[in-house]
Length: 313
Ligand SMILES: [Zn+2]
Image 1 (cartoon, rainbow, N blue to C red):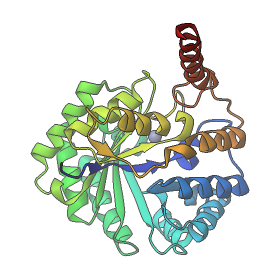
Image 2: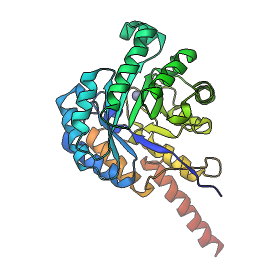
Image 3: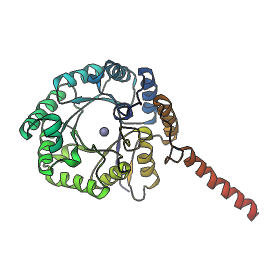
Image 4: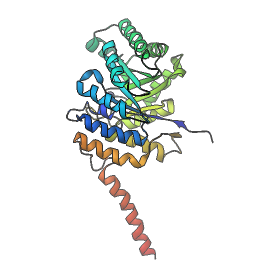
């Protein structure tokens, strides 16, 4: 049998997860979390948005000094100032990633950025080229990707790859997509962006309709090979795709999901608890994989089996 395709697990608990109001974590807590993430085999740790606050800058610096296996990553808007802050906080790691983004949907370009298509294309060219000066590992995201005009999206992706982006992230920023639609978007990108084979396609799905995990998994069949997710699914509004659900679905249903992740699943529960303690966000009892009742159910099956066995004897 051929080797299974690897799915890169990109954790954004400390960046997108922390953007959830009330979920802020101290630098010390983030360092502790990153140690668990590093040990559990998370490929990329998005440690923060360095320009956004001194605390984020400090956390990203501390994590970039301490991680051994994971690649630390920082987020940057399409400006030199943001990218400089990323580099200054990440430079202590032997390998690091800069993740830069800009909105490409008509509604965001008009009301949030007040920029034309041409201006957005120019910003992509300038920001990706600039980030590439600091590292080979540049990720570019088209914010609000699922509400972007596809023809324009193909142009932005082709340009980002041409300027050196090695990962192209497609965010469902407002949690609006459904699985078939998300997979179709990925297929269209594969079919219409001429240099797409030079980059890894990533999915970043929000859970407003409860479909973040389903959308991300649906993307796999169309060619996604990196999934962005958070422990316990924390994140703004209804949260992000839950790392534990993604990883356990791939592991449990490898008959239909012939992929592998590098995650040591025995550490998932530890990661869930440390993130819940740091953020003060309890895990709902019936939460898949890490909820208290999800484990109780497992032992319930076990007890049932034991009882039947006793009766049978
Ligand atoms: Zn997000």
